[in-house]
Amino acid sequence: MFTGLVEGLGRVFSLGIEPGGLRIVLVPPDSFSTDEQQVSAPTRCGDSVAINGCCLTVVSTEEGRWSFQAGHETLSKTSLGQLRSGEMVNLERSLPVNGRLGGHFVQGHVDGIGTVDQLERDADWVTMGFEVDTSLAELMVPKGSVAVDGVSLTVVTVGDHRLTVALIPHTLCVTTLGQRAIGHRVNIETDILGKYARKFLLRPRQD
Image (tube, rainbow, N blue to C red; front, side, top):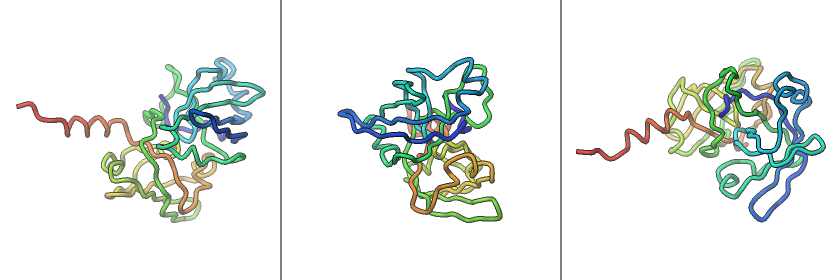
């Protein structure tokens, strides 16, 4: 479980094609080795880390790098297959039991891809719009929560196949959303509450 509050930016060190998918090797930010949480519970093999909002398992931690494996299903539902060496990614380690929930409940299970189709600047703020599949838009409501590339955001508007969010300067500075441009693809995870509510409402009636 995650919160959608990005802890830091990691750098893609290498990408390698494997028989089952893709091996992703990242260099985590220096802050991950000095903060209090990391000192008491260092990241190790088997831990869960959200990379641009996609939960993956650490398969090795060698020479200051974290390695992950993304299978075909993950690559088909997310933008991880489009990563390039040297690219920066949003990182969030899983939420500890005694951690503070500052965003919203994020599973790290990406529902689909969104494409940036609007960038409207107002001073240091940005209204960003995304084209999404109708099946994703149906699970969102204005003022509801959505995770975009792992960043917990509030939905401003939502239509049949798009949504908009308002990004404050801090978010633009400390996440990869500040680097996004028209046409860029992002990972979208809708609010878990919307998924269960929709399933409940669409279930066959028992007369």
